[in-house]
Amino acid sequence: MDNITLEDCVALETRVWQALVSGDSEADGALLSADFLGVYPSGFSDRAGHMEQLSDGPSMAEFQLSETRLMEFGPGRVLLAYRADYRTPNATKWQAMLISSLWESIDGQWINRFSQDTPVT
Image (tube, rainbow, N blue to C red; front, side, top):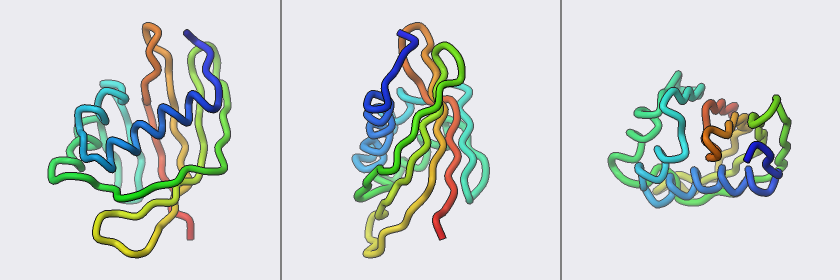
């Protein structure tokens, strides 16, 4: 399945965020490619680093995704761009990031290959 709708891609991205809320590193890792690259304000991360953030439990308490946009980059490759408003555990204030997330269909399964977060100031 090389085609994906905006709604389906947002649902996949939501599963990543739900893994961060539940602290489920296995669910998180199952959605990331083996060569995943994350570009964050804190630096670069690979798949293991993304999963590692959950070693002490959830890294997010709540989230809302909005302003979603989907761009196709050839068969089986899409970029999902969106705004994420979120609150980390024990925080009272919400924060926001603009996120670009590259998804690829490999053997009929959509996986996240790349993500970049840009803080909203």
